[in-house]
Length: 317
Image (cartoon, rainbow, N blue to C red; front, side, top):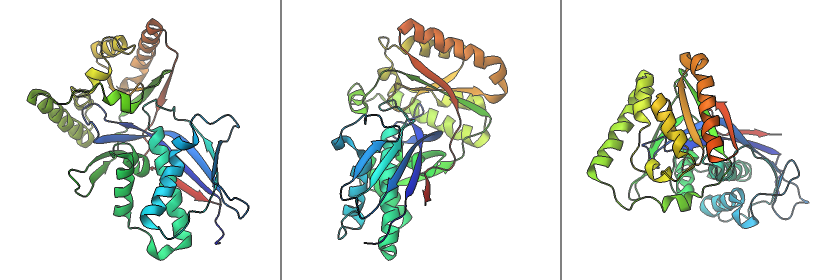
């Protein structure tokens, strides 16, 4: 067996949808999960554990790193048995928090498999477009895995079996980003069940126009375009109904003219301030969040984050 090095993989968190871009748009954030993989001839079975020694927050069957790792070999190197590994994880992203924890595991598993492939049979590596296509297919929609892999803002789509199409943009530095993560979980699968089966023409046109505003914001960097671009009628109203503990806060943010959107299916919220107004508005925003969360009786974490422009990072030792 070829000797494999220790492989360290860091994957940024992501926020998908970003308002109107349901299953289309995503942004990488500088919150990272870290995966350390060790190989040796003494390791006969793959094993995953947390670096801090705590119990894994998911079952073996739910280990997306391992599932992605095996799937890569089945797709691109079926004649080779995947070498077993020991993985130690440092998890920064909340599970089922809407910040791309599942995508980080998928990107880590597929990136690990490609690193192993590179050392075992370098002449048969898949081309980058084929790897990215598989990355998107594994998730089922590309709005988390692609920004996690590529970094930055990514718009991606694939229709009726056509090849994946995407473009990447740098998120403007003129905007400050904040993340609110309430301490309750939302299953993406369950959340999707709350969405309607069809939409009115008016709502579809509304969202298309807001995606246009997003593109103009990325091009011209005008904060007013972002405020318009964050509006949505396809999933946000159904995921933050009046009964939601986030509803009151969302209404307050709207009244204050502070940009916000659900991160993925939630419950995390992204909030945006124009950087030049941070000194005058950040305290107001913090108080608004505190008041909204106290009213709902839910613990939370609130932090300022930056866009991640690099995507997955891979080191070997």
